[in-house]
Image (cartoon, rainbow, N blue to C red; front, top):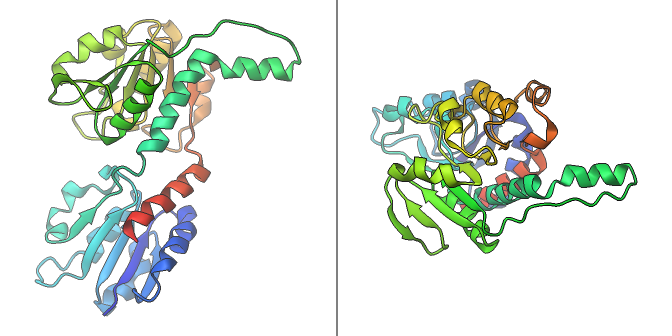
Length: 312
């Protein structure tokens, strides 16, 4: 029998996700979309084969409910597909029994390019000062000023995996000197031209870096990893960029570092609490020291559609 696809994503993504999944018509029995357990009660009662497409913290309870037949040899849910590469929102460590024997896939690689572009844009933001260009245009004045090129500047990527590689490749193409930090590294140059090193080289690397990019996942080991002590090791002229997880940054410490000039600037794409009250940051940090991305939904919707192509 053809499976039912249960889509558990935020309400504002549901329509776009279902539109893409409609290309599977003829191979599935139905598409059911919702954000809580009650939305999928009838599908569960039918006890037919289920494929799940999930995104966000709302999926945890639904996965737990639909996969509660772990005492059965033939499982109700056959496949779970995460629209995001990161899976920490699902709290999988609490679902080991429920997920036993069920194939779980994520969208690894789908987010790499858009995040790498954001990193390049952030570096150019602080080196080429686009806000000053915009201000000059609005004021209709000729305002020549000096800017800094990225060529020969040093970039350190912490959490050097698939996304980090995409960032590194673009940075190397711009003539930057790039070091990728992962848990274990042999101090060798990879195919992208990035020098890959282990965690033992972290302190040495960030002391020399013009830009430090975090791609760390959200775990108990990475919580508040970037704190006052970390920022104190960076150059006063350095910029910190976070595209990993918000929980890895102590926001009070980075605000203090920006206000005191411990580091030059920061670009933050993720936050510990989302949606982040941006006013709480912007009100205490100058525009030229802080670049905040509020996760443009237009980009996100296109990204979700791209990740579903992998599924379909």
